[in-house]
Length: 307
Ligand code: SF4
Image: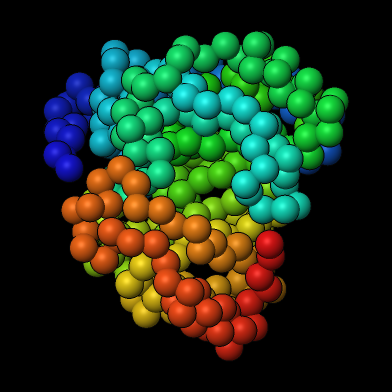
């Protein structure tokens, strides 16, 4: 992945101007109108894209001018899927799931790789229309509205635009890869009822090789602890074939030691999608024996597995 080049005095000046102060700026749980709060903040958050630090890559590029940064995303999100889904954790489904194109990771095995790697994929965002669809789904029995990607947090202004249009009492779920910056998460405080965080890799080496990302573990762990302290949290781990000992075992041990009692969703449905053929061990599905061994590791660490 190429490294952005933010080194100029003009970039520094824009960054200083673009960054709103996050202190005391978050949505309060006792505030009556989440939609109004989101509507009032979205232009300020959009202005921060002039020097984007929405995720831990902290590219400091100007996304208001067009697609930029490691995510190659511009100022407005595009939508590649908006539909009722039943494949997520049982306590969340059926959910009206809204998927935004573009991501800050480059997982070679991504199940929605074409849309996740390309922020320009999908259709334009119509917040009012999507909110109407979500409202209809909720009225017909959907339990929650799920925002996912790609990575939704890289599109925080568009996320706020959607939240501003949604009913205030909708149960909002953020499905994220946990690679947000401290700045972005401070703006998302209390905005979502549930964070579902994909804790994908137990080793930075695996994260670097499979998702082209550095410093993965420290960032995700910091965000997981923050999410536990600020919302309901479900930690999801998709078992990767051949990554039981390097990834699941250390993830399980860390969760047991640092987030005891947290809900853990251990998923065995890996499918070799997108560019998985580039990685020999990822060319097959997870063997039954591997799934059984993963469950035994969860039991050994007394993890609270949820369906
Ligand atoms: S969201 Fe992350 S990857 Fe994208 S431009 Fe901003 S800091 Fe870079």
